[in-house]
Amino acid sequence: MKSDNDRTGQLSEGPLDSRTVIGFYHVDLAYDDQKAVDNVSFTVANGEFLCITGPSGAGKSSILRLIAMDAFPTRGEVMVRGMMSSKMSRRKVPMLRREIGFVFQDFRLLEDRSVEDNISFVQLVVGIPHAQIVKNNMRVLTQVGLYDKRHRLPRQLSGGEQQRVAIARAMVNSPKILLADEPTGNLDPVNAQEIIDLLFRINDAGTSVLFSTHDHGIVKTFGQRVMVINQGRIESDEKRRVPVNRKANLADKMYIAAARKDRLNV
Amino acid sequence: MFKNAQVAYLVRESFAGFHRRKLTTGVTILIMGSALLVLAMLTLVTLNMGNMLEKARAGIDMRVFLHEGLDSRQMAELQPRLVIIPGVQNVAWISPETALAQFKEGLGEDAGILDMLDSNPLPASYHLTLTPGARNLKAVEAIREEIAVWGEVSEILFNQGWIDALESWTFRFQMASLVVSLIVFLAAVFVISNTVKLTMAASARVIQIQKLVGATNTFIRIPYLAEGMIQGMLAGILAMGLLGLAGWFLDGRLGGVIFFSVQQIFGFILFCIVLGLTGSFAAMRKYLTMQSEI
Image (cartoon, rainbow over all chains, first blue to last red; front, side, top):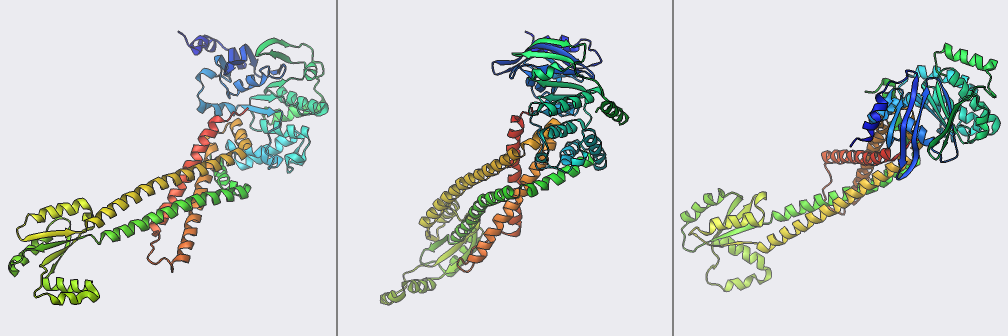
């Protein structure tokens, strides 16, 4: 009798598009007997922006957990930056995580540390020298427009500003993939739009972005690929041809040019 | 393994917890110190009881009585034979006159009753003191059996009741010490483990972010293990300090009480460090495997 890995082996060992950064191949994920992800297959190309939408409990966060290898498929195979879930040991997971940035609905900032310390912290963990940290902080905080507020504590910032700090923190180590799990869930429409624009700018500079949301109002404004999940299954996965509300303005263009000059993924 | 910047971070973080969580760290050290104080007190009581029992064991001796009518040469010849018996430390000759004088001294005011005797009824004897290793019932029986077959010996006496009682008390005391030590040890590990769990719960977000950005479990563990070791060391020093203070205060009232030697104090503090490390490790192992990052 073949194991799950044997069955999925053909998929994982098949020819992969070199541009594919994330691949799901007939993936199931079950918590106890409850399937959170049910036979899901899709790929994400390098530099692509994918919006995953669906009602609460549809399996959006489970897909992000699988990408971060915080959970492993009960069937099928997940590939992230060439690393296969079936061949991934727990010890190697931290190496994968260094390639991924995370943004959450609840910001998850360290409340007792300043904006700058929150961003320094993730660089210290991966061993970036102090002088480089100072430069990186200046760069990302300028890019998210919070350099002047670098000494403030998170509670002294608005929700939108806190989320921008979280994005700066996610991007400071130049990850290749950004996972944003309901990043606009706690924000008013104006701040939500600002955060989406920031995520588009990050994507324009080459980072693959996976944006999960249950808010259909936001999705309608997207001129990007939108995947709808319901009860753990993909209901639809389509790329919209015409951007509805997306045009690079002068500020965006300046930002992208600056980021590219820095050879960053932001 | 780690970059210089990471090592510097780990060193800083190992001590930063004390600064960030002054109150909880203080309470942790106080609780740990209390558990360790009980353990140290118990160890000290065991040490002193052991010392007292050893002193009591020094009272175990034997009297070898000789037949009447032996001449002085025959009696003198016995001494070297007694000395070479394994377990015999010292051999003292007690003449009938010395024995009578000791008997009179023991009678005190009633000693006059002995004046009624025409002659000294007490025989000559040898008084054997034993080496520390032979101060137990088994060894004493072995010595008695070896001497009993000698023709010159009429009777051998030793304080069997005393030895029996001592053996029994020693055993009970050792068992009680073992059980109580084990309970206190487990309580100390439990306290340390729980306090580290609380510390980790308070640092849940920090750990979560560390894991999200790719910190290995080893990297995450190190500051907490170091913190546990430092807390264990400080709690050990606190326990020893309090015990030393109590010892100094009670010194006049409890004469002859022995305290830990410098080596024993260092040994105890080292034990506390290992205890802190073990407690932290146990708590973290469970915590890190339980946590989901997303």
